Image 1: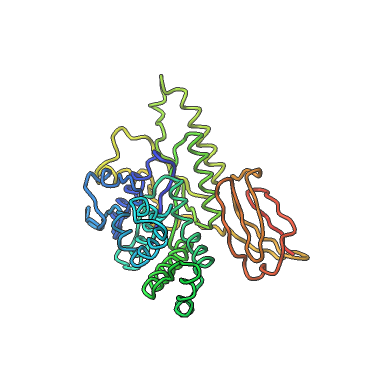
Image 2: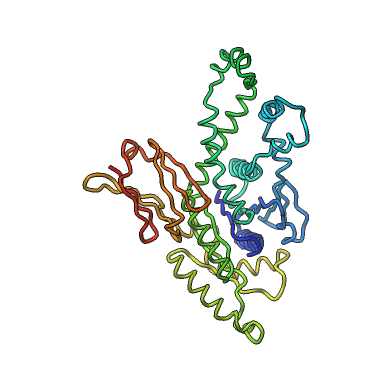
Length: 386
């Protein structure tokens, strides 16, 4: 199964583009499911059909659903919820506030990803199209598996067998309840699922991310920033879709001043994303609603291209042997040097770009080495080890 995620700034038309892509692929004979992970769902509005947490058949080969995070939350927590609730209410009574604390920041997004993994494992469809939330929330969604794995490894390393032996001592001295066997099992199941999910998301032959933008300076800047952050987390962006382009006929009179703005933005996009396919869609005279309209839009965007294919694949990390050490080169376009920070602690390095931060374990051959220098040059962060 192919998985294609559409993301971008709010209001650029991600939902319409995702739905139109699904319609085009389904028309060509592949079985497609398009899902929305955005809590402010509008996928049903695009098809003009009420959708739910279960796939609904829209047409031959075409299915759609809107993921309900409340329902998925109830399914996912199991015994973990009861245990964390005990920790939260240890010194106080159970309140509405403690219930709300059980929904960690980013956890709703994680549940949406877990649902996507479940759909992938079922294998009922040829292609899964994902209409993601606006960029900021999508970044939470995409980085959460790695963050959760790190959290579990650092703060939950205790094993079931050891916990049984230590239970009376821990509970008597620090007054914190030790998880039950069932809770341990649920933690291990969730950890295993998220580990598999993270590996799936990094599989470039299966998963692609496509950024939807409009030809406006602020939105293009956001698209570049998203591209940098996605590269930081090693995800594959295989296409850019430029939506809401004014046609030549419309750039008259009141809209005349938009001609130069639009031209400049389109040139910037082509210069910035060289090598990556860029698809364009003019602003339509009608709303992008209902299957027939979305099908026409899918043809307009992709033409003869096959949107279900992996349209671009580039290695983000490369390791090169140097005279007296190694160079780790990381593709990170559009980064402001002033916002870039790098640190090393043992076999782990941390890279920060403004408010996004990623820590990861170095490849085996670099784990005994130390950083001697680093330089950001020609869209690459070159880190030298010895």
